[in-house]
Image 1: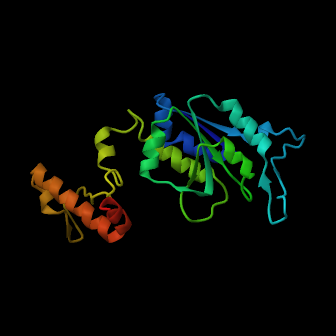
Image 2: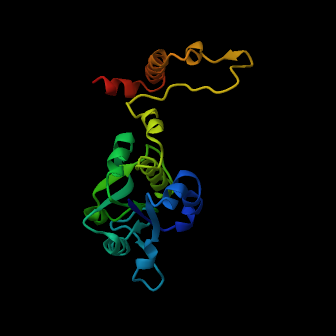
Length: 224
């Protein structure tokens, strides 16, 4: 898989690409990730990428030309272009799974007061990671990249993926490790029983209980 990220602040990605699962996936050639500063595509002698909005208003708006030219330089028949924007669809695990099947993702990070509306014409999907305000699209692009890369074959073992939160629209079950008793709190005896069927039943019941309590919206969505 290939992921290209368009950003005005490429240095923000240094640690993200050099640590943990992302770094290992790149080292194993499971994914190729590149950061592109679309300011490099500006035709303005000063590298300008934004301008004042028509009709007036606060802030600056990202211009078409640098972003169009940057995307055109990267795009192939396999490319899927995602604009990170507050008015996009709220990101979730199902979208992560869909994106992980793509051969080439192009993630477009916004800044300032947003994009010239015409830039949407060269995008395939519009994504928000939640109803809150961020300075730009860099952190959302990292969220999407992390959630997608870990789903690629050979990045994480299959058993771990199958047992994670949201895989079956339920939160993950509680987990424990040594010691068996800590400050009077004991590991549930069923987990020490060696009875795999009972352990699976316990974990599923705990998932349901936890989801109903903490994320009833997920439980209701699962049972619509």
